[in-house]
Amino acid sequence: MSTVDLVPLVDDGLGNSAYLVDLGDGRALAVDVSLDLRGTWQAARRRGLTLAFAADTHLHADFVSGARQLAATEGTRVLASAAGNREFAHTGLREGDEVDLGGLRLRALATPGHTHEHLSFLLLDGDRPAGVFTGGSLLVGAAARTDLVSPEQTEALARRQYASLQRLAELPDELAVWPTHGAGSFCSAPPGAQRTSTIGAEKTHNPLLRAEDEDAFVTALLDSLGSFPPYFLRLPEHNRRGPAVLATDPALSSVDVAQVRALRADGAQVIDVRPVRQFAAGHIPGALSIPLRPAFASWLGWLADPERPLVVVRSDDQDPAEIVWQAVKIGCTNLSGELTGGMTAWTAADQPTTTTRLVDADEITREHVVDVRQDAEFTAGHIPGATHVELGALSDIADALPRTPTVVMCGHGERAMGAASLLELAGHRDLAVLEGGPDDWAETTGGSLEGGA
Image (cartoon, rainbow, N blue to C red; front, side, top):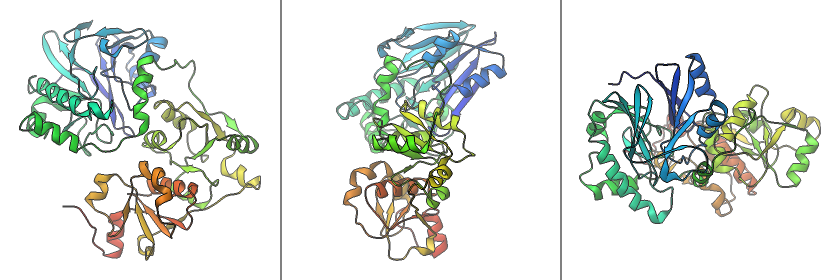
C-alpha cells in the first residue's frame, strides 16, 4: 500500500472524493477539487501547506471545478488534459507527460471512456508507483458511466472505457487506487463501496474487470446506467470555458415579503430548504421542497429550473453559507436571495400558505401510492400496487397521473416531499407524504414487499 501522505476530501452529497497530497516541503497537490474549496483550504491550512498544484482528471459533469479559482487566488498551477481545450491558463498534458512535483512526480495516463479527454494520474515516488488517481475510469467495484456526451457515443465510449480499465489493470496489484466518483455518485459508483482500493482488489472483486471480454463489459456497463441530473450535461462546457473566479465568498442576499412577491410575479421559483415536517406544517403555495442535507446540491440541480431566479426559504437554524455553496458548486448562480424572516415573516404579512399531510404506514388504505425512488431502489422492494416514477422524471408526467387521493413515498420522506410539492404545483390536491419508506411499511403492517431477490 502507498505511504504517500494523502488526505481524502469526501463530498458525501455528490458521492465524490477530492484528494490533497502533502508533497513534504510545505506544498500540496490537490486533485479533482470542486469550487466549494472550504474543506480543501481547511485541510491545507491545518497542515501549513500552500496549494502548489491542482490536477483535474476530466471535465467534471457533476461539479464545478475549483482549479481555476485556486490558480487565481493561490497561484496554483493547473494540470489537465490538453485534449480538454480549456480556455484558461493551465498546463495541458498528454499521454506519458510527467510533472515534477518536487520529489514526487505525476504521470498522465490517457484513459478515455467516461469522457473523451479523461486522464488518470500515476503518482511516482522516484521510480516507484505510489498510487493512481483514476477519476471517472476505474472506480471501486465499477467504472464510471459513458452516456454523458451523447446517446450516439455511449457505446463507443464504453468500449474505450474497457480499454482504459484493462490498461489500469496492468499496474502493480499493490498500487493504491484513488477514484473521484464513489458511493452516492450518479456517475455509476455502486452503493456502499469503499472510497479507495488497490489494483489487485479491483481485479479480484470488480465485476467489470472480471468481464469475459469487451462485449460482455459493454453490456454490463450499459445495463447499469440509471438516470442522472440534467445539470450534468451543462457543466463540462462550463468547466472547459472556465468558471468565473469568485472575488468573495458567495452569500445569500435578503429579500423581504414584498420583494419575494414581485420576484414570483416575474417568474421566480421558491425553493424551500426546511426539513420535511416544517414544510408540511405550512409553506408558500407553489414552493419546491428540497430539504437541506448532503444531497441538496444534486436535487437542486435536478429539479430547479436553471433559467428562473430562485428565492430560498430556510429555517433559522439552517446555515445560509451551506445553501449557497452547495448551489455554486453545481453551477447554480441564479439565487436571488432568501426570504427575510422566513415563513414567520410571510405569515405575519397575511400571505397565503398551504400544508401537506404526513401519514404513517398504517394510514395507507385505498390511496394511490406513488414511489419516487430510483429504479434500482424500487426494484429491490416496494409496496404492492405502487406506481413508480423517479423523482427526476415526475414533472414530465405529473399531468398524466390520476388526480385521486395520493400518498407519495421514497426511502425516508425528503424526496417524497419534493415530489408532493411538484404535484401540488401541477394542480394535484389531496396529497400526503409517507413518513418512512417501504421497510417501515412492511414492519408496521406486516405486509410483504414486491420485488427484491
